[in-house]
Each structure stands twice: as structure tokens, then as C-alpha cells.
Length: 68
Image (cartoon, rainbow, N blue to C red):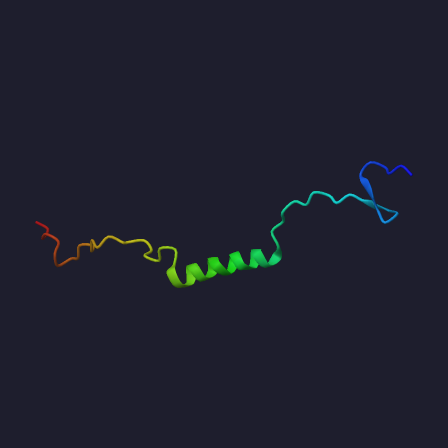
């Protein structure tokens, strides 16, 4: 009995050959990566220093020169 291409015989049954499986990222892996990113940002932070504002106070009327 000839077996069609892409099939093989197992105990007198014709079975399809297994397809090559592409590695997929499982849902648990995605959840784990998201949890790691959240923990990293929560405990270590992404540089929470923020923007540094220059400490140059505006001149006030008391420190301004008198008008002639």
C-alpha cells in the first residue's frame, strides 16, 4: 500500500507527519516578563531623579538697583 507524501504508516494506520513547530512565547512567559519589568521599576526604578531645576531665584524688588 503506497503512503502519500507527508504521511507515514503506524501499525497499519496512515498518519500525517508532524509539522515543524515554531517556538512561541507562552502566555505565562509574557506575564513573567511583565512582572519582572514591574518589579524592576517598583524596587529599583528607572532613574527617579527627575528633572533638576536650576536654583536661580528671580530677583526681587529689594535686591534690584534703585531707579534714578
